[in-house]
Every structure is written in C-alpha cells, then in structure tokens.
Length: 388
Image 1 (cartoon, rainbow, N blue to C red):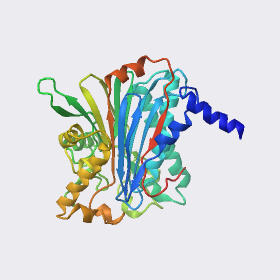
Image 2 (image 1 turned 90 degrees about the vertical axis):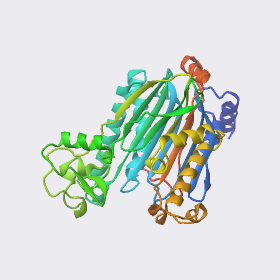
Image 3 (image 1 turned 45 degrees about the vertical axis):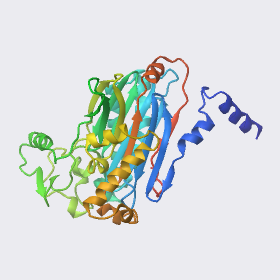
Image 4 (image 1 turned 120 degrees about the vertical axis):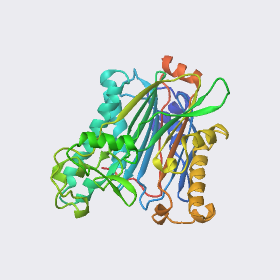
C-alpha cells in the first residue's frame, strides 16, 4: 500500500519522470458522453491544444480514433511528437478496432529501429497492421468468414520535429487551416489524398491497374463502387478483395466474385505527404467522411476559426448533424432522438479531431531534452471495444 502511495506522489511531484504521471493519465483519458455523442472539449498535446468528438450512428460504432502525444518510439531518446489516428470501419467494427489497438504500437517500434520519424516508418506501420489483421482473418475464417469482408479507412497524422506527416487509405480527410498574410483570412488546404471511386481520378487509377477488367468500377444505384461492392479503393482489411483464398465459400455469396481473382483488387498502400509546418499554419482538422459528407473543407475551417477552441470538435460534429437534419427536412432536435442503428439512415458515424499548432511549443518540443508528459486518449461510443 505504501509503495502505491509513493508511486502516486512521485507521479504528481515529478511528472517528467520516466513513468507517466498518474494525474495526467487520469485527466487525459476521460471524455464525456451525451447520448450518442462522445467528446473531449480540450486537452494539451506537445505542440498546443486539441479537441475531439465522436457521434455514433451505427448500432456498433465503426469509427475508432486516438490521439497520442509524447514518445513516438519505444526509446527514451525519442522522437517525441503527436500522433492522430482516425479509423473509419465498414462492414463491422473489427478492423477499425484492430487498427486502433495495433497501428501506433507498430509505428513506435519502427521509429525506435530508425531512431527517427519518417515516411518509411509510417509505411511499415501500415504494412504490419495490414499483415496483422490478415492473420486474424486466417485464424477466424472457418468460424467467422464474414470477417474477410470487414475493413477500415485509416487516416494518420504525425507532428514531429516541425514536420507534419499525413498518411491515408480510404476517404477520411485531413485539412489544414492556414492564415493568408495579405488578408488575415484562414484558408483550407487539404493534405490527404482520398481513395474513393466517386472521384474520377481514382476510377482512372483503378482502370489502369486492371486494364483487362472493364467492370472493375461499376455505377450501382447511382453510386460508383469497386466491383459493385465497395466505394473505397484502398483500405486496411477487406481481405476478400485482396486474397483469392478468402473470396470463396464459406464467405457469403454477395461478397464473392463471379470470375477468379487474378491480382489484389484493393490496396493497403497509404498515400503519404510531408508538410513542413510554418507560423501561418494554425490548426489541423482530421475527420472521417461522415463530417465531409455534410461540410466543405472551407466551411469546417471557418467554424474552427470563428469560434472558441474549447469544444470545437463537438461544434463541428453538431454543425454536420444540423446539415444532415436540414437535408431530410427535419429538426435537429428530432434527429437527436433517433436511436443508433436507425440513425445510420440519416448520417454516418462522425469522428473529428482538431489539433491546434502553437509555433513556440513546436520549437520547444523539437529541442527539449526533458522528457515530456504523455497523453493518450481514444474516441468512444456507447459500446465497449473488443480486444483481439
């Protein structure tokens, strides 16, 4: 008992010690629940403040998310920075939950091997996560074949040493709010590449990768889909469209292709961009496509710019819900009464993380020899996550 008390006192009095502060862990891990809306109004990351919110529409929350700030490797020497992950699942929550549990750990391991953050570290983390979930599918295939048709979009942002790395598979989006010196206005700059076949260039990419398949992309019920099945061309999971051995019985007939699979149809390869952060870069919005279906990049940026930081992610989510209600010619208050599951007919799960960038803190985080305290928080729904 005495040792536990001393550990707690040590964490409170010396929060920069090698063990994470118990007080910080407690304060940063808790969000608030308001019906189907979960939110963390404000918390501190190494380079500023952040705000986070999730609204659940599916019966089981398919969006998963996390913010990790502090060590980005397993080494005491660093690097240090902030990691944001938005994982928008489809077909079920299994893949997005798996990514939430494993991707950041892989990134820390590869960053330790290279003793730095890099595009290669992030790419390897994606590959290891994809391979890990493939192992889960292989293990459960005989008793749970549907898991082969479960996947997730995966958007990652890493702020480290004055740089921003953005990696993406699928159609979640990262948008930078940047001040224009001439006018003082904040403009939206999209930093992530999207992989949704509703985009003409993505359809062209699919045709170039599959020149012998005239039906690689099909317009079905006025929506473009890969093989008439799925809207995204890249993802984690969706093994039934990557490995021929998982596109046969006992998988449900509706997921099985009529012709043999010659090569993987979907890819897990992330598009990665690197942006050197400037003093004019004010904030970043990371969000699943549920937000972007309702708000444009510029609309979202203006909401953040024109309102207080505290609770800004929740404000963005509510703005999207107001738009969803308006499209269905109903009141926001009535939309809010609709239960999860049924709610999916009106809007998707929506996850938002707004990361503010403080230039002074960015430089300190890069140059500090003092180990900073850690922050680790995950977005939540009203159902508990399942561990693999």
